[in-house]
Image 1 (cartoon, rainbow, N blue to C red):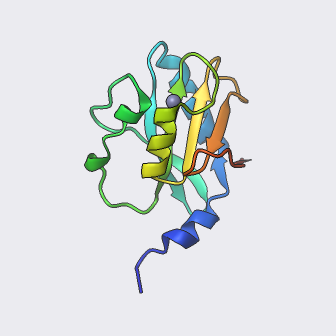
Image 2 (cartoon, rainbow, N blue to C red; image 1 turned 135 degrees about the vertical axis):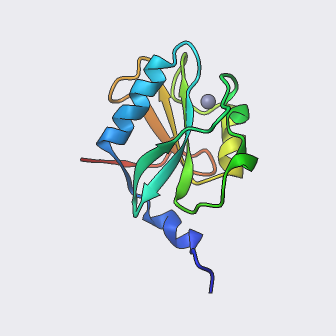
Length: 133
Ligand code: ZN
């Protein structure tokens, strides 16, 4: 029996902590005009931690995540990155990244207000994500 059941945990992530989302939006705003990127980690069924990847460079999001640097950690559920200009829709490169890694992906976009974010699954389809207080 595997130690971690990824299929099970996939169904379990239902939300994100309000303060974590706020932190993401603030990071997106303060990184302007550059892109901000991080890994999302969940405690139970709620995303509550951001993990900045060392050596992350600004630029195309698919290049932001140096996946080979990641340790095996099953609390990692996906990624977040910002779009300094344009909307919260994933680019072709974004969808390729989503398919390779994780199953909950956030994009935050200008002007980084409380509603300027969207959540996608591993296929780049928009999915609901509850904001938990
Ligand atoms: Zn993107």
